[in-house]
Image 1 (cartoon, one colour):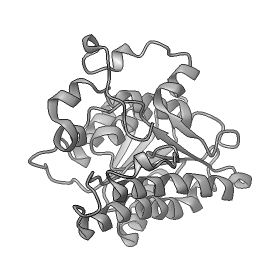
Image 2 (cartoon, rainbow, N blue to C red):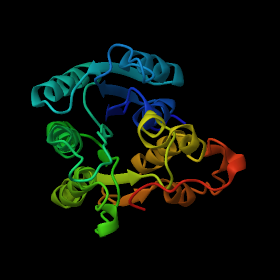
Image 3 (cartoon, rainbow, N blue to C red):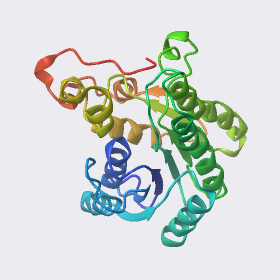
Length: 274
């Protein structure tokens, strides 16, 4: 399907994991993908770089631009957006995927990690949205999609990792506020979150190793869900906190077995915040 042909998607943290999966799915639909991430050189513990991701996205059917970007710094985001616009002529889609995580309690969370999570997650999302908006406002069907959870204000989602929850909910608050702020301008702001854990490097290295990976779904489910959201009319689809399997079921995809890393296990691990 080429219904995103010629559209340009700026995706933060798209060198691996969910961001890359979304980029690949949009590339299959003919989109131009801007891979805005930090990994220019191979990482000893993490797969892929912005350049290998770009090669995969072009092989999938899209055009790709790899840009070294750190969403903590305004001048770097501005330079990346300027390069994207110079290369492709505009921006139609922004996916705020870049995120930092540390699941520790208050006494165990160094302020350096607190600052990192808030600078990347909340501030990075706000900053990228702000800098992309002048171009999104000129687009035909502009969408911003934040990889953040529903705003479920229950103590159980805060008590074990308050700093991380605050930083992720900050991304969701951007959806809440900006969707209303730009509703009359036709720019859609939505959030997407997985029902289950997703088999990414974060799950492998930080959360539960191979045991949890086996009980997760593949990142492709998030790519497919994002694809269906980003094809909706922006004026009619904004301010939503989507969950991946619900999006697919609305699209008529009811059998999700092929997304499981190990379909034989049956029971999958629920993600946070759901």
